[in-house]
Amino acid sequence: MEAGTVRQTGPHMIGIAKRHLQSVRRRDFLAGAALIDGRWVTKASTDTVVDPATEEDIAEVSRCSAGDVNLAVTSAETAFGSWRALLPATRGAILRSWARLMLEHSDDLAVLVTSEQGKPLSESRHEITYGAGFLDWFAAEGERAYGETIPSHKPGSLLQVRMQPIGVSAAITPWNFPVAMITRKAGAALAAGCPIIVKPAPETPLSALAVARLAEEAGVPPGVFQVLVGDPIELSASLLEDTRIRALSFTGSTQVGRLLLEGSAATVKKVSLELGGHAPFLVFDDVDLRKTVRGVMAAKFATSGQDCLAANRIYVQRRIYSDFIDSFAAAISKLRVGHGLDATTDIGPMTKAAVANKCRAQISDAAAKGARVFSPKLGDELGENFVAPTLLSDVTEEMLIAHEETFGPVAAVLPFDSEDEVVARANANEMGLAGYVYTDNLRRALRLSEQLECGMIGINTASFTGPPIPFGGWKQSGLGREGSRHGLAEYMELKYVCFGDLTG
Ligand code: NAD
Image 1 (cartoon, rainbow, N blue to C red):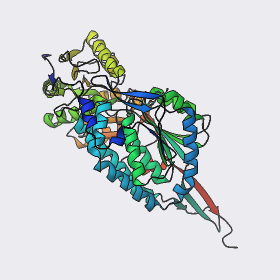
Image 2 (cartoon, helix red, strand yellow; image 1 turned 180 degrees about the vertical axis):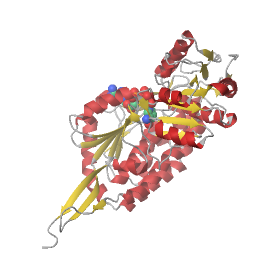
Image 3 (tube, rainbow, N blue to C red; image 1 turned 90 degrees about the horizontal axis):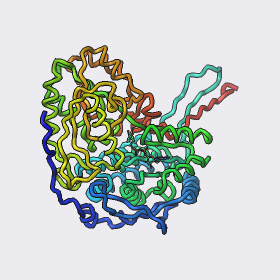
């Protein structure tokens, strides 16, 4: 494998985000005000939003405080009574309008996502459609919170189980899907009858605030959907200690997830956590190599690798190992690196410098321990946040990348010999979010779908998420589920009612 120079899109990155932001038609999307109690609140102190490709300042957003969290919770509590009293179909109609408005404004929203997050514009557009899909789907699912009638174990009685909204909820969301991780939570909460307060990642507040503008326009009442940007520790602490918040949904790292779980204990909140992943991607020697490489490219390089579903360990059966490496390297060498707003870019910058540094550390560690490295050189005009799409082959379990989440465009390939061996190696990880199996053997596919210890498995596909599926992980990848009827249940309490003495 030759490590040449990476394919780069145009070097003219300085000012590109600002120019695109100037062409955003909805100027209010850039106002930077928080949405609290149905009002757009502007603060004297602000946080700066940065284009991760150039590290230029592109916008300012108001910095909220613990006092603002208190106001937001009071407003949400007031709104809860009337929101839960609406017919589910009425709440659904509002959610559908919100989804429609997102699609109508998807060009503007996509520019915001790429400008602050860095992903290619086509992926940002896809995120808007994907994100709006959760609102649409939960609009209908709210009408199906059926409950149960239980055959009674007591003579002359009727036993019912009802699903009721849990109350004011909070969401702490990440920067890699700055729109869809909000709508996946808010769609479920609002459909269930719960108001929700969102604290987005400080790297990507513009997308969150723009989505809030559209929520208001769609008719979401004051207090039902609120967005506060500010210091994560200060705002989260206020959300955690407030007894009026009954449910907390978090997407982010396992490390922060643990802190939030601990912090929720004092007020016994219902906690749902979508945390890190370390997906094994198993390739058996009976596969169609062309289709498999297409799958692994999607599973590794979507969102520039900053995806919790990303293939972190690609296990390839020895007989086809060398052919696989050649085809994979050829596909990787076609990727173009550059600014997400350049239409020809496949891989944008890492959103945070820490992610780029972690990628580089994993590459050096693997190289020092004997991995073969195919890592094209980046041009000087691409700054520190860019990481060249890199292939590491002959990776072993001793290397950092084999057990630490990468969250960037670095692909680790490990050879294996037998099915039993690869299942044991795939499961030998504390993460259990997603897994992938490529094989033409149906019996083997069925066996592996049983044996792999993860919440979601793609068999001969790298594309399986969406509103109807229960998204979530096993082990330290999280608690609870998002999307699907299980996602709705995260915002509901069960109530058991026994009607006795019916014969009297
Ligand atoms: P992170 O956990 O640092 O940040 C996520 C959110 O938590 C942000 O809103 C951030 O402001 C907030 N936060 C950070 N520190 C906090 C603290 N001490 N107290 C309270 N809130 C705090 O995660 P990250 O590094 O920004 O994102 C990458 C991680 O998120 C990866 O590990 C990835 O796997 C995970 N992730 C998981 C999913 C999923 O659905 N399972 C989706 C996206 C990202």
